[in-house]
Length: 294
Image 1: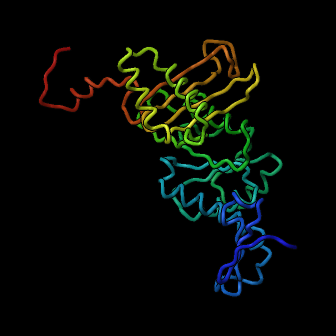
Image 2 (image 1 turned 45 degrees about the vertical axis):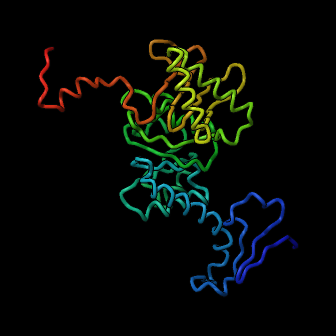
């Protein structure tokens, strides 16, 4: 076997062109003779799990450093995969935070037998999870259908910024605007502007300029298909704007699945306490030295 390598004192890294954009944890090799924690009897396990475990360890560390973005439990898709098992092992050591494994019916018994997840649910049972529990998800499966079903169940369809969600911490997802072409950035700003048309010219221009100033921190997230008949969801999110577009299922309408004739949109200011709060009433309730008639 031959490959390009970059050496170090007790390790080397695969530097081949096909590895250029890979994380170091997946390209590094170390001399186990210099590792006091290495156990020779587990050499096969090291080879099999090292890269996957480090990926999971970093995911667990990121979530914990950010207080799980306010979630009380983490849903882990592809719960039977080695990377998910490694993440579940890390989460199980933390205590006080639930891990829910999402898997197929075929793998349910295996995943339950691991004893690492607080709950194991099949993909067909997502709608049976308690939607009142604040939840995050680590998607190891990469399935758009699973993500859509989870979003539908735990949010207002796919909306994350609906009623009673003031100051909700929503992690950024999707494509960063600073990685887009100039044409794509202009198209994105034009799309934002379409949601601001109800404002007078002055405030509209000021809001759009504010969005443009934060373009490097703006993300565009899309869930769903792209054919003529596909329902879909997208979100534009930055420190100064939060826009959602979603095709909904029916309540009074008769569509059991999200349909393109049933559209909901949301435009919010992050951390702005802007969703229908009666600020005057709250002021009177919390300011004892004020009197009012009503």
